Length: 84
Image (cartoon, rainbow, N blue to C red; front, side, top):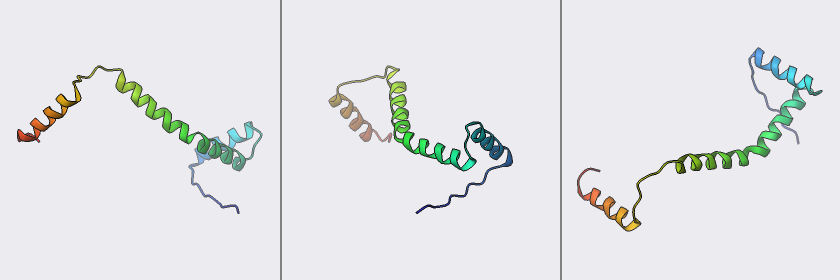
């Protein structure tokens, strides 16, 4: 069963989409469906790429580190200091 999706665009956006669809030998509806299919297919990959990019950015810097026991001890000391 097909469903109808209504999307409101300003005139300039619609005209550009219609032009692009025509350049690709497609109706506006065909082009929009193709673009939405591609977006759905690529969505999980895009999410993974964003996560990896954030990880790359975070690991590009040097942060102070310590033994986990030492860090946990310092955290606990901070709780007792009244600074939380």
